[in-house]
Length: 89
Image (cartoon, rainbow, N blue to C red; front, side, top):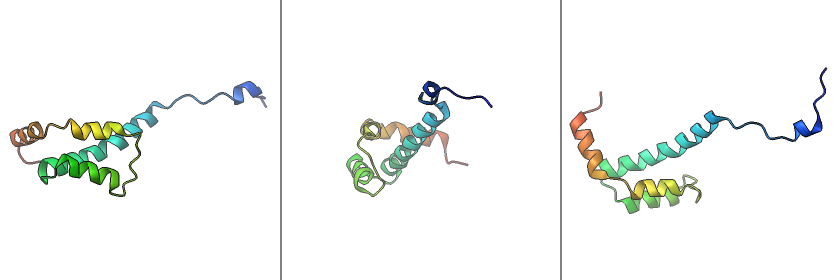
């Protein structure tokens, strides 16, 4: 049986790239939910942001990128792209 040195045991494990991708996806998908609300349910960006923060979804202030995502959302471009592509099949 091989013994590990105590210095090796104290080193942090290597980062898992897949885990960081999962975290990014977990933050992006909710952003798309509010994108849909704004573009197709005629919500204002303020309504979407309010629901995101105060709607009981566990919003954490560290996720400022979601707020920027909504703020910078080009609603007209989304609607134009969907109109060009037609209905989802």
